[in-house]
Image 1 (cartoon, rainbow over the protein chains, first blue to last red):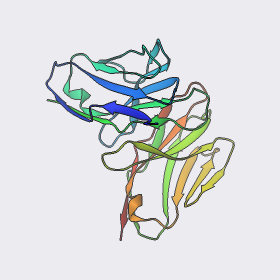
Image 2: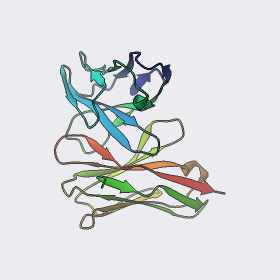
Image 3: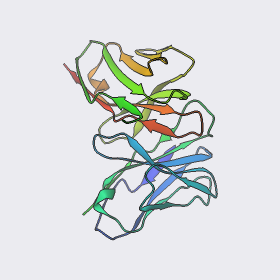
Image 4: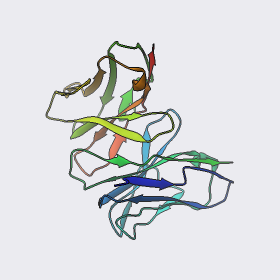
Amino acid sequence: NAGVTQTPKFRILKIGQSMTLQCTQDMNHNYMYWYRQDPGMGLKLIYYSVGAGITDKGEVPNGYNVSRSTTEDFPLRLELAAPSQTSVYFCASSLDGYSGNTIYFGEGSWLTVV
Amino acid sequence: GEDVEQSLFLSVREGDSSVINCTYTDSSSTYLYWYKQEPGAGLQLLTYIFSNMDMKQDQRLTVLLNKKDKHLSLRIADTQTGDSAIYFCAEKKAAGNKLTFGGGTRVLVKP
């Protein structure tokens, strides 16, 4: 299993541009998440999904959109990039909402908005 | 204040023990986790503890949970240079599967 795979790993965007961060998992997990990590801070939840066709807002959803058309994929869309969205983005997945343990993380996507 | 708080930095000599502390506010937390993040990498789950336990040991790692004080600690025995990283504690509340993370403790291991 590859686990959770994110692309791209690095990206520089100009203010106002749009882009999609891709995330896919091959573990047949129902739950998927997008977090952002700002320097010196913990991770903040942007959006999450409990299954295909179902998404919900996390703590910091403004400026982002998600979709979950398949179990495997959970792309994160930035419509009008702003400097405040400069951050490291982590996608994650877990089997369900009840297991006590592992939430698996991708390796991160470093995004800079200039 | 923040839901989960950690000290920012810890410096330790190679071979010594490291203790990383974390406090949280939600008494309904069901699981508490420790993640390790090495430079330029994602988060790696180190260990976790269920809220009805007060201690868990896994090789060089010992997790202590004081539920009354809402205090969690991670002890790394015989700290190695490869243990230099940022360590995040996280709590999972009773409802849902979302994690709330602390700000991370940067551990620097000196030879």
